Length: 130
Image (cartoon, rainbow, N blue to C red; front, side, top):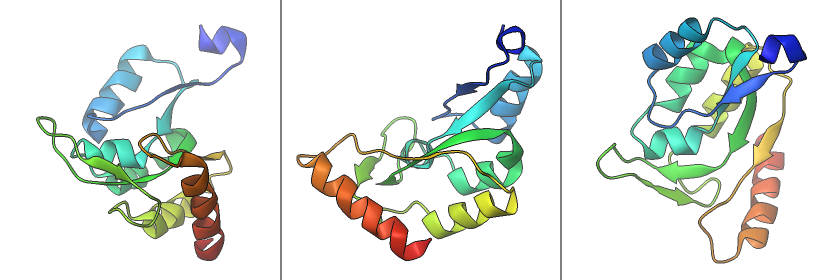
């Protein structure tokens, strides 16, 4: 369907390993099915987002920029303000650069009493490290 519409469709993994993502993409068999990477969601689910990016970077079509602390499938981690969690943002951005990624970086904050303030702080944090 995606190829007939000349559109990219992105799947957003959370609990999915690189092997599972590769298997799903192979089973679908459509190069227009790409990955919408949310490193914080992956980390909160116990998956290493940097390893995923390093191995599958050429299939990434968009990236959510947020932070969190690790969890595992039985006990998910928690979202944090950008720069206060354990997502390796510098490593992720370096890997994006290595893959010559030119897609969107989407600032996202879902678990906050003051999301507007957190997003403004996230924008400033990104400006400092980019």
